[in-house]
Amino acid sequence: MYEGNAVDLRMEKVIAADAIFDDETHHCQVFRYDIEEDYIYLQLKEDDLTAISLDAKYQCYISTKTETLYCTGVVKERYQCEHGNIMVFHIQNGFYSISEMNEPVKRK
Image 1: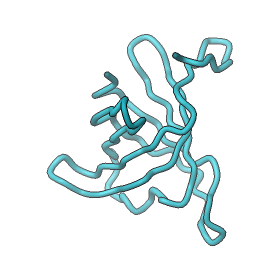
Image 2: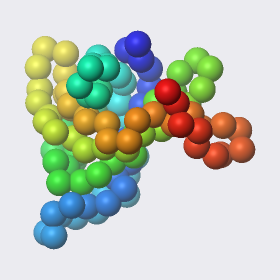
Image 3: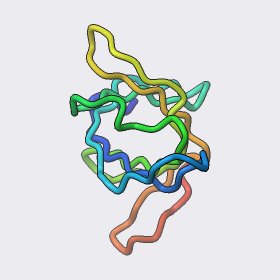
Image 4: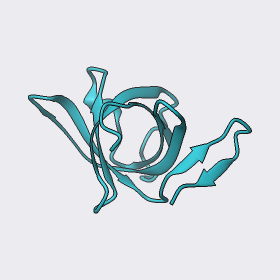
């Protein structure tokens, strides 16, 4: 459904007490979207997969041809394979469409 779309991933807050907040925007691409489980498989376009924390909550912005979608969630898993650096992102609040007025609208 969103496969191939560009993604910006930003840390919202750290979960673990000893985790370090990362204010960088990480550039990804949707590799696969599992609508049943609310997982997005993201392909990280950067080399350092360990820059993505498993102990943090992230904001995920997906750019489609017609709109920008927003969701929050956590990275459940990260690994390297023949397709590159892959992250399993678990969506926690559903998708919101970001309108031109910057007000999120719940997407059903």
